Length: 326
Ligand SMILES: [Zn+2]
Image (cartoon, rainbow, N blue to C red):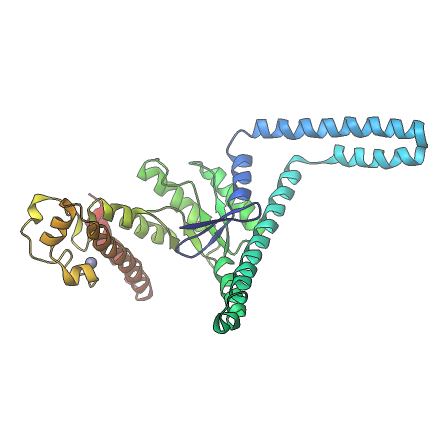
């Protein structure tokens, strides 16, 4: 995952890739989940202060310059009195969405400039293409649905984001330590209320079974460190289930890691050799294991796509449930 600090937004480009709209959704999160009282008091304090200050200024203006000058301040005072808390928050969110969009287009512009300034005629000629491609890649701006483990807040967060009309929607704040049951309850509640014609993205998830269930709930995209992190720990996912390559039982196993896998690791090395690399702490172990796990996860989602198209989804899902739901 590459992260870019843009103009007032923090943006991520992951398997997608996507441009996240974190800061603004954090506002929604605060508005719906966290201490809204404190936020409201802050707003009210600022509003009361502004109204008082404008009143003082109006009085002063009346003394020094007459009624006409005072009216200008009084108009602003009335506007400050009329400020609505929810509207003020929404304005701020809209502003941040505009900033995020500007950051996307600035970044694309910067890539194009970088290519245009290269001392290479071919690269210079490609600058316009680079801008176009970057804009398209970075251009998927996702609103992130928050709301903790509360269905009503998830619905409210989704509703507000749908009102803002994003190109895609992400489900955030899951797989953060809650039980699998609660996570699935939130997932199956949230994914279906997001527009099905736009990409839905489940952030930071997960195991092969989590991904299968995410797809079942309506999710289109995932990103997670799990395949590579587990690979480095020797935990490998195979068509026969999960295994740990460091186990003694693989010491003299000449068979492939996963007989059903066509990755470089499985085509080239035995389980015994992979175990040897792991226990010897050879760096090649990290690489070969990662190649396999990434292939397995990609095969899982490719297989899911084919199963949905061919009307075999229930059967495909059941196979993963049987393999991992122990
Ligand atoms: Zn493999």
